Every structure is written in C-alpha cells, then in structure tokens.
Amino acid sequence: MTLVGWILALGINAAMVAAGWLRSRRPSSVADWQLASRSLAWPAIGLSLLATAVDSGDFVAVVGGASLLSR
Image 1 (cartoon, rainbow, N blue to C red):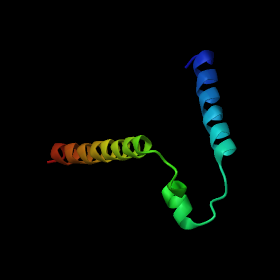
Image 2: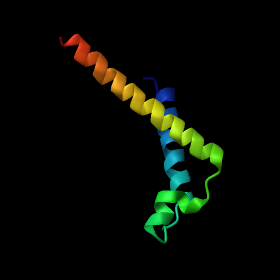
Image 3: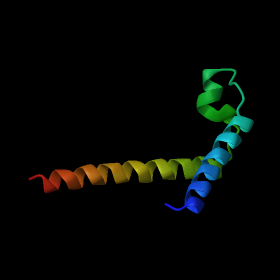
Image 4: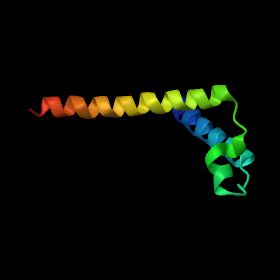
C-alpha cells in the first residue's frame, strides 16, 4: 500500500471514530440503546436489515461451499 492509501485509510477510520464520538450520547435505558430511542427513519432500518441479511447469506454460503469441497 502506498502512502496515499495509508493516509486515506487512517483518515476514513479517524472520521468514523470522530463521528461516532460526536454523536454518542449515553442511553437512558436498555430499550433506548436497542431501539435507538425509536428515532431512526424507516429507510435506515431497511438498509440495516438488508445489510444484515446479505452478510449472513455470505457467511452461510461460504460455510456451505467449504463443506462441499471437503467431501
């Protein structure tokens, strides 16, 4: 990786940490933490569900493919 790549990787990670730190508030209850205080818009919830489904599908597919190769 070149110097530009390292700078970009570190900058993006630093920006994500900074954004999370700036937006973080101590949740007042477990329900607020788990449900994001019921403040998320439905598109954000839908994208989160889609990303979770795709990620779990990839995991299951990789494991299934590995088990077929080991036979």
